[in-house]
Amino acid sequence: MGAYVTRRVGQMVVVVLIVSAITFTLVSLAPGGIAAFAGTGAQGLSSTPEEIERLRHIYGLDDPLPVQFARWIGNLLQGNMGLSYQTSEPVAHILARTVPFTVSLMVTAILLALLISIPIGVLGAYRPNSVVDYVATFLAFIGVSVPTFWLALVAILVFGVILPIFPTSGIGDPTAPFSAVAFLHHLILPATALSLPIAGAWTRFIRSSMLSVLSEDYIRTARAKGQRERVVLLIHALRNGLLPVITLVGITIAYMISNVAVVEYIFQWPGLGQSYIIAAISNRDLPLIMGALIVVSVFTTVGSLLADLTYSVADPRIRLT
Image 1 (tube, rainbow, N blue to C red):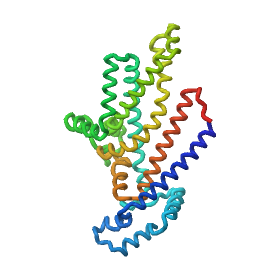
Image 2: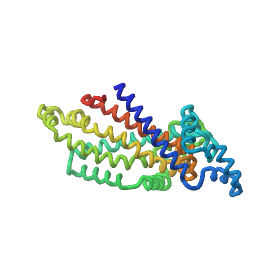
Image 3: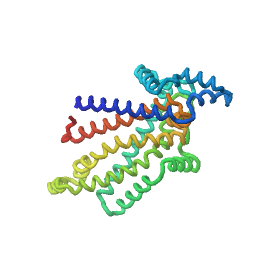
Image 4: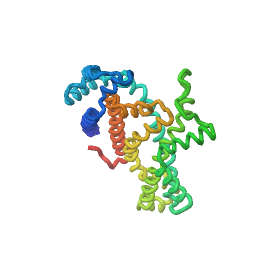
């Protein structure tokens, strides 16, 4: 196990380096010029070519790309991700302030998706071609088909305007002391909007997996031995039927990254995607783009690693070497 984890961590580092190098090159070569944006953002269009060139020198943008990337890697190893071109704030401070909110939103959405998809998928497989199965399949199809941003807007309209049950933006009064109840109250709508499309896909996957497991010989043997149906379903079938879902959860993390930025922007959730990622990409804020890329890469690779480790724990037959 230890050798496997060490090898996977080494692979993760290589993947992050390759993706970072590609992104750094593409953003640096994109038209428009980061230095031009930095020079004209606060002063209108008054910056002269000499001032823009001076900014390029200050930010080290007049060096060859390999030198710039090597310098960025060296600073990253020291915990320095540079200054944002938009706000002149250290990128590390922006990430430390926003990433916890993004993580809390993603984790809550994953838990909600599991709580929704597992019961519906299991019931659909246990009663195939029944009313329950048809309803489960229809709801799963709706969840997969509806875009996340549309769900977010409908949630705001229904539960924030027509039925003002939940708040529709932010995390509460920033001047008031932190309250876990208020935080969860603000978290419900964005987490639900993020989780429903995922729950729809997982429901279909769980139903298919459980149908396959319920037709296995060991399930018929357990029933022939006189074991109660609840034991057969929840102990024998469910444990084996949910094994592929573990891998699916790890893969879904990468899918969620793209949607979480949209949900955070709509609900004004103070995570990394609420304004920073979108604005950084629009304005070619290279330090902030690279910092966000590191976070996304770590989320994706660590999620995949945890899924593999959990799979081996859940199924003792699998040995990671």
